[in-house]
Amino acid sequence: MEFKDYYDTLGVKADASDAEIKSAYRKLARKYHPDVSKEGGAEEKFKAVNEAYEALKDPQRRRAYDQLRAGGYRGGDEFRGPPPNWQHGPAFDEEGADFSDFFESLFGGRGGGGRAGPRRGRDVHAQVAVDLRTAYHGGRERISLRDGRRERTLEVKIPAGILPGQQIRLAGQGSPGAHGGPPGDLILEVGLREDDVFALDGNNVLSTLALSPWEAALGATVTVPTLGGDVELRVPAGSDSGRKMRLRGRGWPGKVAGDQIVTLVVHAPRAETDEQRECFEQLARAFPDYDPRA
Image 1: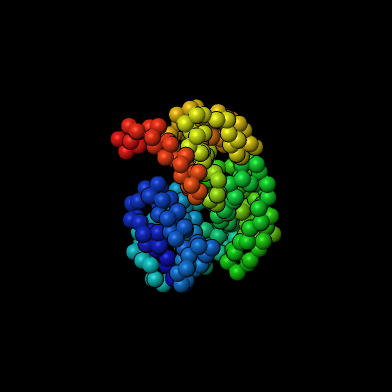
Image 2: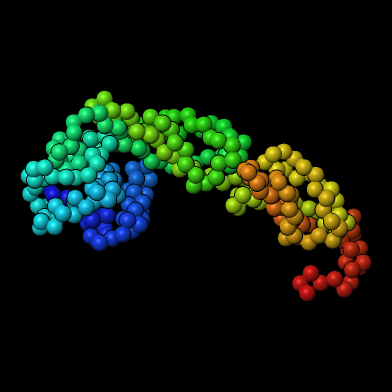
């Protein structure tokens, strides 16, 4: 079999810190994930990156691998297996089929002192895009998932108030176990689809409110949509376009609910009749010194 240089796979130096290794893994895993990558051979590269990280993330495994590598092995060299009684640290608990013979000879059940027994399947990471309103209220989202050669459709329960970047763990929905071991979990990272009315800023919800010139000038009580239902907002007289008003507690749910920030936008109607044009001319005469650009 072929010796694998896991540092080279992750693009880091042999003295890289744990944080550097983790950062390199996350970057490459996102780049080559089969659900998002269009590159040729992305699936194989994704598996190689996962394998390298599995070998290096555990301090005992990494120490043992470093000792082996210090013997002069380099990526691509012929490798006949670790020496007798080689101490490799904890055996991995992932699905063996997803890792190379080299990895299993070091840390798994085919050799290297690993025990042949039940092994838990690996966790599968994926991303799911959720409607903003579903994330606010909670609900269910159907997702299509490709894990290697398997394609599945799952209905996922979305907790109310989940935020972008948070994760949902589905126990037992990962890769199958080996030798009778349990399957791994499916870990979904949540993203939000754009909404035509609302946007999320931290735990605040942003929206705009269209006003007529007379509502802005004279003041008005206007119905405003929120994710929790319509509310009445009192717009003060003399409000300009761009003014922001706060609806406390009407933002994203949580231990402390966010606010809804409403930006006022003043729209002038078109003067399409002589009578309408005369109204605007009267306004111009009534405010001879008004210059909105001043």
